[in-house]
Length: 418
Image (cartoon, rainbow, N blue to C red):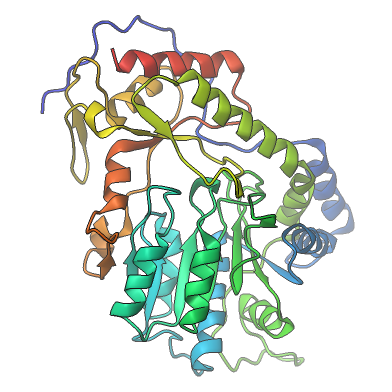
């Protein structure tokens, strides 16, 4: 497909410094807690920063226990293993805890949400999204339970900081005696029906990766309500060492505990969550207002029930306004058409400004590594996730972006539709 650039676009000078999709925003508190760890020589996987970080997260989310771990993926792995033990019992010293068991998983997400299911020998069944929130479709989930009544575990994601219809999903899990893992990696600070995300599932997971609204450059946390699960995850995450003087192990463990240094960064970041969320919301609203009148929509949420953290501001182009676009495993091409555009064209125009955007997540059932696993589409057979991937993109959402930079980005997006 020939690629034709819009000759009507006025040439705009690129930004001197790159505007990122989302990058860390540091304050003074982080350095203080890191220096304190150095001064007191607590630079391993124990220390005051870890203790206080876990306390702050427990208070924020409203759950009794938080376990700080090396990454959001590690937290998901521990959550999935803990859920499997609750459901199916102890797997033995080396046996995979989900061997041969199916698990319902969000389809439109990053691979880290699903990979731990494979780590534990499980078989994912991907559940399509809905247009109303872009998250797991409760109706598709209900149909999945009819198709696979033996399934007892669901892993559900709050995409881009927008809450899923978690009440309906929770009710379906309860009705089928299934446990729910709530992947709130992207939604720290998001509120649904007056409660923080991460508090609805049997287990909750948070990420502090470098692009998240609160970051330690890496890190994650598992949230739970019972002391037994908390203690079990702490043990697993420190190589499952038994509490004796010598090194003794009755089960397989993992090197997943977070460093006290990184915990100091996260500890210093958490008090800034409200301000970071307010800045993210301002970016979302400025995009919404500046792009009004174009044939596209911002990533939606239930306005009467949800208060997203707006981690990433995204848009979905109307079907009739899509110019021809083709993607394969390595390339994306488009043909400019007057009055129309597509994610590839807009992302190229943004990149020319020295700003970073991204396509919407490519659904798991379209990934080569996961293509052989079952997929449950929306009720009418539509592949909603694939459609969102084809027509959607994530806009630069860094809270350090200047207003004039965002206005320039809005201008080039508008030019793409001329």
